Image (cartoon, rainbow, N blue to C red):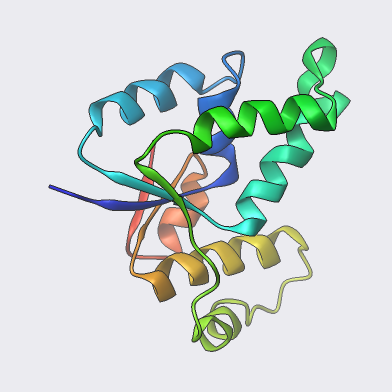
Length: 141
């Protein structure tokens, strides 16, 4: 089955960085999904590049911007991986998923990623269990 997967930034980081707490789980899932396709958007790509160059995340393995691009290019070389621009009808989906009475700034990114995934007809793949309750097509690794 050719499942179309939209990966959360935390999954991309775990695939790239072997010392990520969930790296083994992500890599095992990715290897088992040989017939599937994997997508990222500019937001998830930018988030991963930012995390790779953030000392509080990467500690002694913090990358320079150039090194982060080299790691990203290794991911991008896999023919199962593709970039998706924003779908035309994303705005409506994003607004409907971001009408909370909360003041949590984290919910903006979650709402955007879930809206992007839904508007593109993709399965959202994450480690964040809370997102499973906010959307129907979410796979928590």
